[in-house]
Image 1 (cartoon, rainbow, N blue to C red):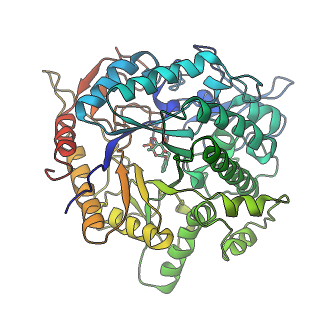
Image 2 (cartoon, rainbow, N blue to C red):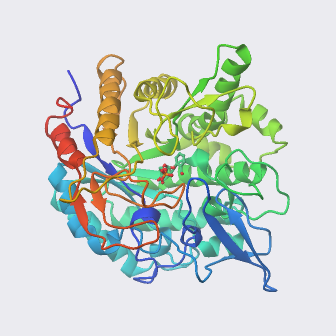
Length: 500
Ligand code: P53
């Protein structure tokens, strides 16, 4: 049987890590443009300033203090500004994707390229034209665009002027953005993802949050203190989920054939032992992610939501109509990222994160140089878990191995470890389709061309089939070259997953 005919093989990227051209074509700043480089041991930072000139710094998952604004600081390196320069290389890059035989390419739209301040009345035509060109270039090769509206792209002005997603006004700004691009590409794009990884959003970076009442959040692992306020985060995500449902509503009036996706980070979670507190702890922990897909796909807050709210002493503020909106405009499919599995240990419960960024080590698995356990079977487990729960089509829109690549003297890159990782994961996907009969639309490995790491801001953490000559401090020629995995993946696609 194997992979179904028409299975969407491809690759995925996000604007803030790939595009660059941060101040070109009338683009405005996003909070991600304020994030410095970093490493696994020294986290990325964001500088902020109060009106009286006092400055401070936070880590990635944290909030800035109320009254401060994010700033760009002289003397620091900001990897998103050029990233790997898709802005100037899109034709060359898309030609390479086409050469590999991509059927689909997942990209995200930089919100501030279209609405530079987020609250503008009129869209920036130049920004739209850039994506017109990108989409036309994809269609020229028969590559289906899969478009993420919001991938860690928080317009700086919306963060500083409105307090980010805690403010309901953002729903309207987001819908203006959504409507503009739905209408513009209604005959060109069919697959959409409204918001990337709803469950890992937090702090100033992705939600634009400021706080003076700082408590430990559920996703602040990569940041320094002050940590994101869990209540603000849950309230913000409520607004995002209402925005996502309203975007679904809008989408269906613009083109009823649109396929609208929810998207979560769903790397799997295992209990450390068969001790009931580990088993139930892991189960409860998993629901801190699934709560969001439950709302977006089933249309209502599940019974256990109250237990999560109580844990954080949080009371959800809703408006009349929210309940109906969530219920009526659920998403058509569930897109998710899968990189690894994580271990939940009852003795150190707070080291786990719902997206699977860290957690206790797993003695049965090897890990990447960044300590992410490699677990192909875990992907089959998650595919089953999600399909059992929702009975809606799934789409793996991120997967892959962040690794250090060695460029040989003759220029070749023999990324056998990456090939092994992908091969083993695709085998398990095949099992999930063939044996378990999971309905899977497609597979887009992450960073199909090398891009900046979201977690660390490094270039040396690479995922691509295509190498880009650039280092952690932005030195390099941006030259593209094919890795060994490029030829391998090309053959996987050509044989529809039969030859791995
Ligand atoms: P990097 C952490 C955990 C799970 C998913 O991550 C995550 C993150 C962010 O660090 O995000 C997704 O680049 C995300 C991508 C990101 C990718 O995972 O830290 O959607 O933007 O690049 C991989 O290796």
